[in-house]
Length: 428
Image (spheres, rainbow, N blue to C red):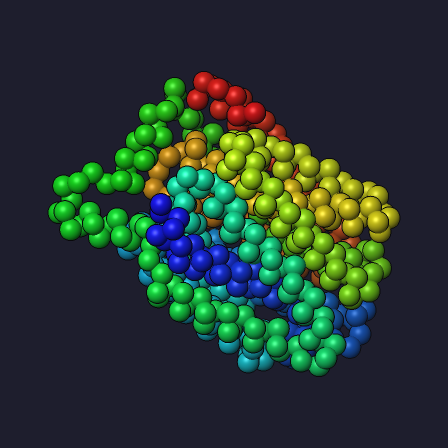
């Protein structure tokens, strides 16, 4: 069984994404301390200098998204050409450099460069190689293997915000940066020692002088043969565009839940960090639930995406329009469950369903749309913060996320109708 033979590749990818879970929130969770380190006066939360410091952090976050946006497409192509191992190693090495940069730099500009490089490392290297790698290592349930990535991202996202507050209160906030440095070194070691399915198949094919039929191409041909009619270009666009909608919602909620709790709900620092952890607990529960539903009960990934989209819209409406702390906590848990519980990864399985092709290439295109959202959301947040202050900015941002959730519902319903036409059976 591939999952046993290539267990180390699965462990490697999952640990890398455990580390990525910290990278995704390290700037926003330590925003005030980073701004101080970069030379901003953060003593008065009502001052222009304080707002400028927060905007500088959001700018660095935006550069992370831009790095993802411009790198993941070409990363997917490179992954299909050179294999998974080299990109996993390169991503780990780049992570080490970036976290060391965050640890020592006193320049917002250098921090933005590090943010950009970490985005390239995440999407151009790890997303382009890690996502295909786990699908190839566990072909019996590739959707569940993908959702497993989200479990480890969520796990670090649950624990890390609480560590941030604890270390900051202890006067050791830089431990929050040292931890992912050590984890990145472990990622590098794992990537070096782990075998990868695609790389081994590629070597075997080259050893046979190309005479044996490529197993990857055979899989693609079989998927296309199962279709009654070819999907339209609009259908292919929609399955890719879902990455933008899903990532915009997930990223916005992940990055600004704490700020929403502090500025809109009036919570304490620890209570607001608790909101982030509740959001993450919801996502972890969802990962386990959806992995079971897809692997054991054979639920269609499209069915999961539709349910996620509907419930995400309900949760965002609860956050926005019911201003009671208990209700907000419940809505945040729902948001974590349905928006961040593997929806993005499940969407990639939908892409492979409607648009069979090289997994590295499909991952690259899909995550290019994701990278666009990663760049757009912090840019919008920074501009809104400058224009109207943090409280109004995060509230306006949540309204925008609700609009995106409604668009995701409409897109999913259209794809459900197309599924019947293309495959001759309902996705539900």
